[in-house]
Length: 254
Image (cartoon, rainbow, N blue to C red):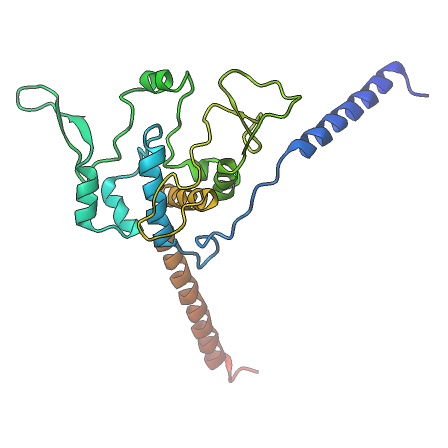
């Protein structure tokens, strides 16, 4: 017969098993998308990247920075040098010291990193009810699920369920850990107007800005994949040549 300690251990495992299955049942499956940049031969859709940049600039940039991206990097999404110079010139940053030892303001240049919307972390928290808006430049790589997670998050805003204990100033999101998020839904239909005539639906906007942030997290993706494919073909060719040499060398050996 089981002693009291054994019974307690069995009950403990049963309890943990019930809790784990309950947690698993609450976990939402991400909305999977067929991203063009996935796979060995994947490439970014430059039109989508440019639309996504527009969404970032007009919707996201007021709260979220891109501290790891320079304005000149935007050549990677198909923008010209003149367009990039014009974009950078819209922002003012603090530089210096000058010859007199003083800091001064100047227009941003293409070589500068994206100007942060806040001067410091405290200002950022104060403007967002105590919640710090994270930098987005590496967000897709930093979250499990990558682009699918971000796309799902942008499409996961719902009304609070009746039995949900909501905290003040929070919003319900099916895909955010804990189901509560401090950021309200940032996008909606027609919140931007696309220059190429694409319908700015909620889903389209979410897909475009996710594609853009996938690019900011890995702007060298196409170059890396291209190098990988070339290396693979070279190794295959080298292997075929070595096999041919081997057969020629050993053809007279019984």
